[in-house]
Amino acid sequence: MSIQRYLTVLFSLALLSCNEKRDPLIVSPINPRYFTNSSGKAVYLTGSHTWNNLVDMTYLDKTDTFDYTAFLEFLKKYNHNFYRLWAWELLNWNTNANDDENAKTYLVNPHPWLRTGPGTAVDGDLKFDLSKFNEDYFTRLRSRIEQANDYGLYVSIMLFEGWGIQFSPDAYQNHPFYPLNNFNDTGLDTTFASRLIIHELNNRKVLGLQENYLKKVIETVNDLDNVLYEISNENHPESTDWQYHMIRFIKDYESQLGNLHPVGMTFQYRGGSNRDLFGSPADWVSPNPEGGYRDDPPAADGSKVIVNDTDHLWGLGGNVGWVWKSFLRGMNPLFMDPYDGKVLMQSFDTDWSESIRRNLGYTNDFANRLDLVNMVPSGELTTTRYCLANSGKEYIVYFPSDTVATVDLTAVAGQLNAEWFDPVSGTSQSGGETQGGVIKQFTSPFNSGSAVLYLMLKE
Image (cartoon, rainbow, N blue to C red; front, side, top):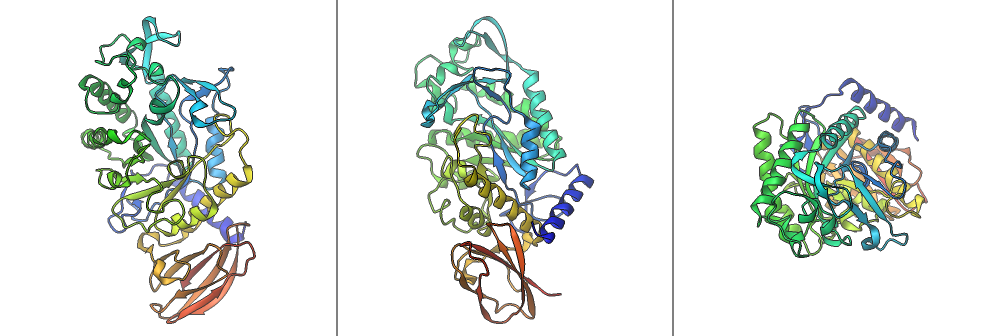
């Protein structure tokens, strides 16, 4: 780690320790590609997330629960500041549907509703009373967000989870709303097709239960400043109207309580369209690969804050190029992380995931140094096509594999300091001074195959 980067990280941590309480995020009125707060500065969000960071997913040994504090330490080690807090609606997760070579069925706990009986559910435990909340669940939810705040982390609360109900074996029979798993009148029947109705607007009784759950979540965390919401992970395309309704419901209910938090809508699987995300009332979205978000992301235009999440681009995948391309196209990259491999991808390539984690942190370093709120994607200024710029003052350029590229500095009156950064080693070196007012050719000093060039107008 370079001395300059080390000092940047220390400074960022010092600021967090002095300002543990932060006001909620809002979309920046100056640069709506990013969130901001009362500081007026752009808040760039980036990090890793994993499936069992809220509910425990245990196999055989029920005491082998998730070490949440270790996860937060892991995120700070890589200089991350954001993650999704995963919901899982089902009573279990059968990973056969994930093409898992070591497929297992994990037990999932806790759930938002109490299991009081009378009678037993299909898993042999007591039936749910969907009119009574499990306070342990909501205590855990609040505690984990408070602890994340102590680490300077923003958290997106996943409210519903739609992938599992569609694809996990016997998913509907393992959902709390399945008629044999509760003694409440939900209006659902036991047919396989009914599983999708849970995330649509067709059943007013189910919708009422979900709205009561949303109220409980909101009341639990409304006073916390590091909160975002995500309606549902990878629900089916026909859930669009239901998700729009839930976005508006959250905004309306929070307006009665004081704090307003950003609400997001993420890729609908299978067959969802990014058009439905960008046409939604959400503040932020996570797109699917259509339009190049995986390999050559289009420049963010500010119509939504974009969280470019590998979960919706690969499932399990990503690379260093995707990190920097997303950052310099005005997005907030997020990594679906196999973490310790206990849930999925037990034999994952640690070098692959390590390089992504480190470079997410490197982009966060730069975001904290840049006057990001005044920078926009400006690919036309360089032959690499990846550039964020406050034209005339500040430029950051990604060299994917090019060793030589030009940067248009004709808007610069004066000289700039140049700095080269190596995404492989994480080290930087001076590039000296360069004169503005011209289209300048730069040659990377690294042999690693990629490079980052940072140019800043001299005072």
